[in-house]
Image (cartoon, rainbow, N blue to C red; front, top):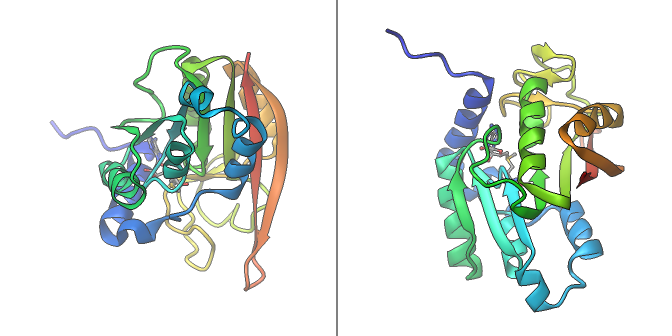
Length: 238
Ligand SMILES: C[S@@+](CC[C@H](N)C(=O)[O-])C[C@H]1O[C@@H](n2cnc3c(N)ncnc32)[C@H](O)[C@@H]1O
């Protein structure tokens, strides 16, 4: 019997796995996302070192650890998960060899988080859930809400529907392309990529048990004039 063909989520993880194998740390940023720093600074950097050590933070889709090292260095209890074994291996080296910090890292799926209910104070997603289609996004948001404590926060930074490449590939649902196939476009060939409006955020967060606290638009115009926009979203677990 032939093995089941990989679904879109598995194929997307394979794309990242290949990139990490081929390009190592060169395949992602190595410094943290600025909006994530702003989010943590506004809520958690004011805590004492002892209190920070009691704040349990999970990055879903942590990749090679660009954000995770900063979270660990700032003294939070740090956890990371990613579907790519290559990404996790790079993250381990990134934290330990470059920054002298550690985190609890696991290889696993955003669709089935291997953590108990109500385990984390904060979950962060930096450009990872954007690589899921709508059905899988619903599953991932249910999982994020399940592992968050009541009143815990979910910070997400993801592509918006104002981005130039939103139609540059084969559409699999209202907001998702199976890949950005136009090689001239930013983020081409990264597997499934979805583009949300603030309305889509509201429609998906509510049923998962997450209340949307704030949605900010963060835009960037590339040197060639191409415009890419992200949504910086703070959700609170009901
Ligand atoms: C663009 S990278 C971002 C990595 C990291 N958050 C950063 O900011 O550098 C997206 C990551 O999401 C992971 N990913 C995508 N789909 C996934 C899934 N279904 N389950 C687990 N990880 C997934 C990929 O392996 C990849 O490491």
